[in-house]
Length: 100
Image (cartoon, rainbow, N blue to C red):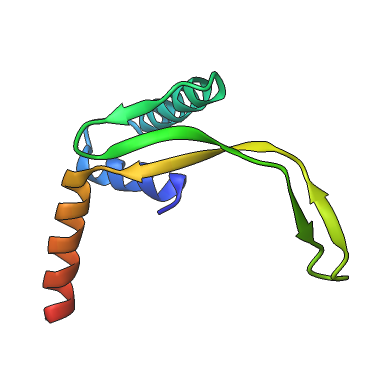
């Protein structure tokens, strides 16, 4: 689901809200999440999961076009770990859907 699809779905389920207000709400939430992760803090949504930053060590990689070995610098990447409740609900839904 893309950000615009999320906004449209929220607009369908909440017809009393203006689309521009929904866009503002969604953008504000994402901007705040970005700010928290940029500071290196963790975001935990009970029953859903947690967003946090992982450190990736420097390593050697390969240029896929030329095969040349290149140095990949150390970096920090956002990571999401699914919560137990979301895993449980997802598995129940997918199993039910796959058996139909």
